[in-house]
Amino acid sequence: MRKFLVYIFVIAVNILVFSCTLSEQEAEQLHKKAVISPDYTEVTMPCNIAAPTFALADSLMLDEAQAVFQAGSKTIVVGEQGEEGFCIGIDDWQSLIKEANTVAIRIQGKQNSKWVEYDAFNIYISQDSIDPYLAYRLIEPGYEQWGKMGIYQRNLETYEEEAIITNSQTNGGCMNCHSFCQQNPEKMLFHLRVDFGGTYISNSEKSPLTFSHLTPSPSFVYPSWHPSGKYVAFSNNNTKQLFHTTDVNRIEVFDFSSDIIVYDVETGDILSCPQLHSRSAFETFPSWSPDGKTLYFCSADSVQMPDEYEKVKYALCSIDFEASTRTFSETVDTLYNEGRSVSFPRVSPDGKHLIYTLADYGTFSIWHKDAALYMIDLQSSEASQPHKLMKETGKRASYHSWSSNSRWLIYSSRRDDGLYTRPYIIHIDEQGNCDKPFTLPQKDASFYTYRTKSFNVPELIKGKVSINKEALSSLLK
Picture (cartoon, rainbow, N blue to C red):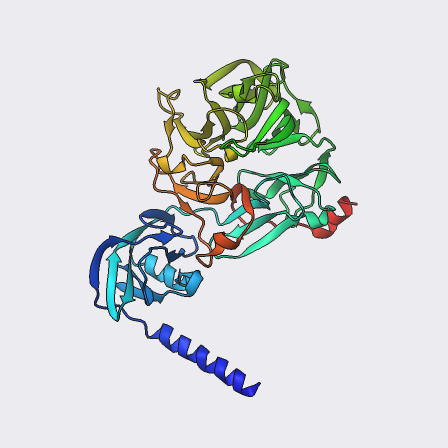
């Protein structure tokens, strides 16, 4: 045993010495771009996000490899650590991005005792920070199983992830539709199905959060908080799933009926109007404007379901709302109705841009190969003319949420393998120009290979969620 421990100690010391003596090498230029995974080449990242880790995915066989990070006059060399890839420490990363707004990265490798080097690529650093926490649900990719699932939060400035609530606390039932009022971690709600079914809401702006049971209805979904915190808009849906055997879109989720209601948090009253609650149309995906004066939603003609599910094409609509009198306008405006199907409209907190998901048909875009994100400039005279956000998002893009400063959008996508939903981040400037999206950095490059769960409903929040677990346990009895 003692010899074994000495052996391990010697190996550890050698690794430490080797890692401390790495240096930039004189290398022959390959004149070839490095293929890395995840792809962080030429992306724009927030100044406060955790360091990106990546692995060389090129077919070129190298005996060893290292990445040279350079910003301004500062250079840091990082060796490749197997599947974990090139892992630069958070402190080293922060020291680099304080030097300059561009980090140039060159990957060098040893091939037949000779050093070679790929073309450099850049990571651009924006001084627009991102909200420090992200909340999301982890679930099996098909959604038909939920034996072990939960709502989690990730500190974006580190790699720390922890559970907010898991279904081990709820007799293994399904949980979904977590939502926050203006990215406030102290105004939260979530939804439970099966046992303890209904919506649970905390609106006291105190931490740790104490929840109350809003309604026994299991069908209030797709919530959107009014910016005042006094109202929550929901869609009241009768939802079913259909599993294809040959269709390119593996799963279809559809509604037999859906209407929109607004819940008064203070009185418990339920508000609606004929324009949001009719038998002739499916109304769903409500979303408030940042001033609370407009409710955006999606509406499609009701058809025979499930026989005509491919005919369901949701238009993007809006209706005015007067909070003081709790009344809606009699007029509905249609922003998009061009033969395809809209879901998840979201207005930036500064009120300038609206982004939504567009697919050929239907309501559950995450399984639709053609689903992409589109943007409307709400301040333009051509607001009815949306444009595609980025060609890279046109691969199974779906649910998305804004940062509180309107400079970042996080969205869920199955673009990598068509199966697992992963979170992607994209920088959007004040004029609506978009940079290349990138996947949320993790501690090692192989994380998404081995995390066999889908990241569902990513919501950026301004701080950490803390729940009064004893009070919640008492409520769930």
